[in-house]
Length: 397
Ligand SMILES: *Cc1c(COP(=O)(O)O)cnc(C)c1O
Image 1 (spheres, protein in one colour):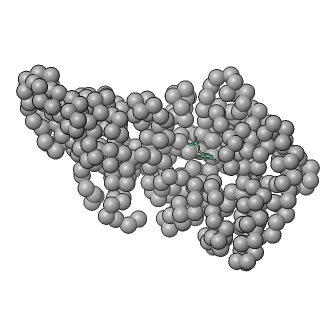
Image 2: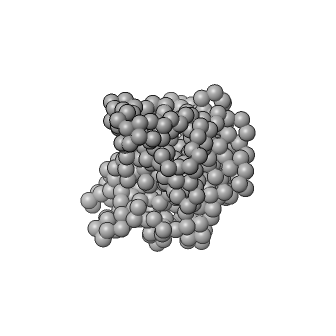
């Protein structure tokens, strides 16, 4: 397999398939799956991941914008795709030509899209987004506004050039187990069902009603409806630390780099930008490794993070640079240039997860996964073997 063996991410497609099956086995029979592969499949690479899921039977795919949808079509994803965000109306014909479904979230946007579709002689499949508690995009149906939302949606469903076959909402705190969060999720679900029911009374029905993200799919089986939108769990990551262990998830991504040089230093030597670390004793051994914040390895790990070298944890010493950083390998026998270093993954019984990154950085595993940089080739593993590599810097898809 041809890729630069400087820093790379292994993406284990068998883990993706395992996670898909694990979730699928928990779904209400007949419930469809929409694999959420926005943001390059949460940094895992949209093509290989989506094709593996397609083969496994994922019914739908979801992305954030039309370029991501085009990328999927170019990479042999033939199943229906829903764009969760806005597509400029002038691209209506592209939606129709590529068979891509569009979220409609306001009467104003639906009107513009309808006009453009009619002008371009296209009919666009649409899913109506209802805002039941996120206060993000969607027809506002909170606080007793279900009836007004239903009225607006009914007008939208009658517009020419649009075919509204789906309806959905998104939960704000399905990943939180506290009682008031659970109440809020149930309130959102109620508001969604009420709005859909008001539409049914007017004779407007939808083939696909969906509201669950990963967390809700796990914690609220009664809310599965016609389809669930699975994102983070497919990658083997828990929707929040509270969900750790709730399902048998296998993290698909591991991150590796290499040792470029090892040096033995005396006490009192300043290390990296800003001299934020100073060697503590004679004979301290520091390894320079080939990853930095331009690879998505956060500068916030300065003097905080750790990596695994030869099956042992090695703490980061000094500031993380753009392309390199230093770790303390004192006591790690034989550590030398060329060694492979594990930054995410397991080695010799030690492990580091994206959740560990998130805890150190005060964020969530989702953000950490998305931040792994385009400079890091994605190497696909199947049956324990490398089957392909995507190097974004020099290669095409
Ligand atoms: C990103 C997203 C999802 C997937 O969420 P996960 O928590 O990763 O499962 C589902 N629905 C919408 C609308 C989203 O934007």
